[in-house]
Image 1 (cartoon, rainbow, N blue to C red):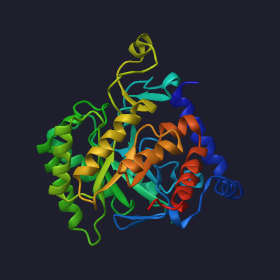
Image 2 (image 1 turned 135 degrees about the horizontal axis):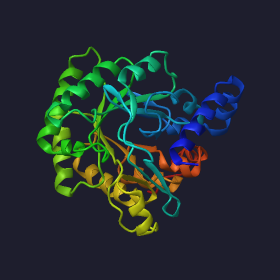
Image 3 (image 1 turned 120 degrees about the vertical axis):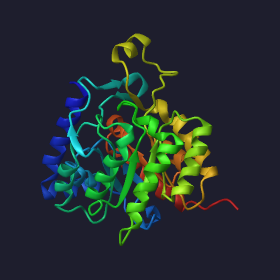
Length: 339
């Protein structure tokens, strides 16, 4: 079955099954790991565990309620844009089983921010943090991008616990140009101005690409300090195709898109380690990219991430991955630390 069709069918069936209260409780008993050692207090928020669902899995907020039964500590919805858009032509999602990876060029397909708001208005689970990942419409020029981000920010503000500014997807033309220092500083400063005018401001994080140079990462660190945002999500998908097991012919047939999964693991960890050394201690890093096992999650956290997110690993390993990570972290923290 085509990957995108398989995704929609799987999550639709999961939603249907988990709408049955008894089944929902069974899933929670199987996959949830409850331990005070997993709790994290970051950005003024209480996370019951540090394992989150990355943006892109539930763009329109259709599935975050059933997904909470799988043991996540937080779920990020989106990327959402002001107006609904169909995204890029299909096929646009591809499996690379030899690499335990995916390539996607979805193009911010979503129903628009008002559709997401309507679903969030129905209420969210009390024990799971919900993040809102925001972007710009494809037809909005970069010079007017701030308007799109502020529209999404204002619409979602009452309904999400934190925000993520996505300027790092490779699948919207020229979007990554917004990662340059001047436009990014202006965008984040505007959002922070709106945020600080609220009675209770909410955390804003920036999602960055793994393809940035050290110099560009230094600029990102400066921007975080200058604008006062709460942290960084490292990293998004990569445009690199280096050292893949998938044949060059197969890659050529697939074409453009962002690569996620196991091949991104090393670079994502490098970025986390680099920016952790540069950022102030209170700045939060959410590590994402190539987490396919509990050991991969530990690697990200030891490199300097405060929380982690999974997506492609969930596709390949299933929901038991969430449980394995949380069990490993709970056990790891019970072991005596070396003197």
